[in-house]
Image 1: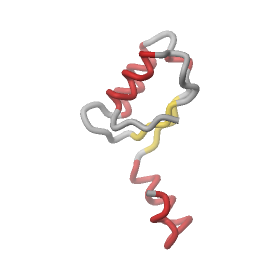
Image 2: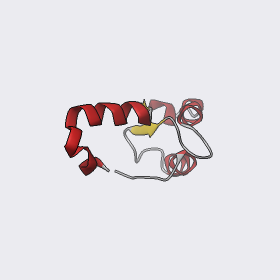
Image 3: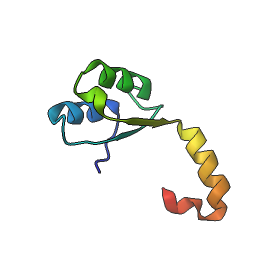
Image 4: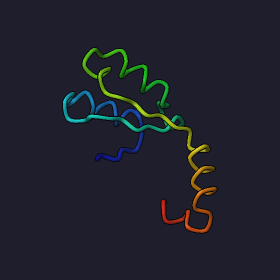
Length: 77
C-alpha cells in the first residue's frame, strides 16, 4: 500500500509502473487535482484503465465512521 499527498502524485506513481498497483482508493476532494480528474486520467490510459478505482467523499466517510465507532473514531486518523 502506498499513501500519497494528492492525485497528481498518485498519477505519477501509477504511470511510473503500470503493473505495480491492483486497486486505487481515492478521495474526491484533493488539492491541485480532484478525484474526478484522477479517474479521467486513469480511464484515458489503456493500461491504467484496467485498475479498479474506489472513490469516496471524505464527508461521507467521516459520517459513517463517526456513526459506527462514535468515541472510538479518533483511532482511525
